[in-house]
Image (cartoon, rainbow over the protein chains, first blue to last red):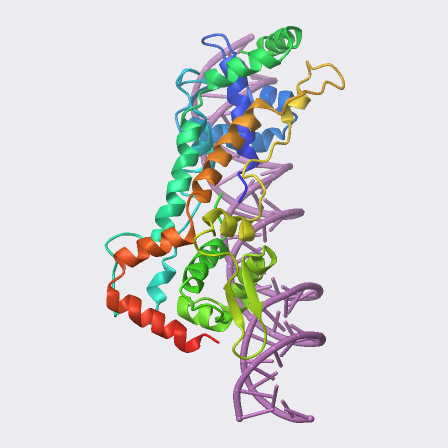
Length: 162
Length: 162
DNA sequence: AATTTAAGGATATTTTCAATCCACAATTAG
DNA sequence: CTAATTGTGGATTGAAAATATCCTTAAATT
């Protein structure tokens, strides 16, 4: 049970996009080069963000992506779900229904207790991801990345932002 | 990101094994028949439980599986990790290291902030699963399964327990 | 007009999951 | 003792998902 690497890519890309001046865009090409990722495939992750309404896009030269949701409102869960989907990690196949001792057509009012417990853990995971915003991430990065590297990175991005 | 169906199987099997009288075993064959699962493949899940030390096994006719860890101590996390492994759901490929603005050989003291956040959510999931024991599940089932079905099921198992 | 971009479909490759089969050793029942 | 039964572990196969690439299209910029 491992998240797609696209989740990692999307999170890093949103962190970069959060540093973009208002109204500017950054292309897939630049994001791929910055992170050392396959451009064509990264594009799929960015399309997921676009379809989820988390980013705006612009065509043509100087086009690309920018955040649509402000970094102070954009949560990790938004991004993870945009790429990974909103489905639960535990799928209940209701195998209890096969119990040869249950009467025919026996249909529980509530879902399987095992599924309920697994779904509660799943929800705890989501609650945690919903509590962290991209703005929080930027604050953390600001504390641990040396100022000169931070500055250079911002310049690198700015030079390529359309 | 979906858990293997073997996780579901293992949890249901442990619930059944918890109802066994002390010292008795239940075979893969009986567990597979009860849940309507492929015997050979279910066997792999049970082997995982065995390798993790959660169940005892016995060979020959009247052999099979029984809980080694008491139901009051056996947690959902024990079972999930036995089948699914203890690895984290988020794998950090450290793509930040590709940042063309970082100096050569630039090595962070702490892991990537994104990974830390994702791992905290992962840990929240584990904390939740660690808090639920098989005994808790049995208590829940006892409340929602009609007494006659419960009794019939116990008899069905007992008849096949070696 | 030529270039650049995102969007999306088609396809191929690799990995993981699901499932089956078999040989083996240990154990029990008769 | 003998035959049947069971868990273990390895080998193998098929199906599904993740990973990755390629190409066409339409829109926007220069």
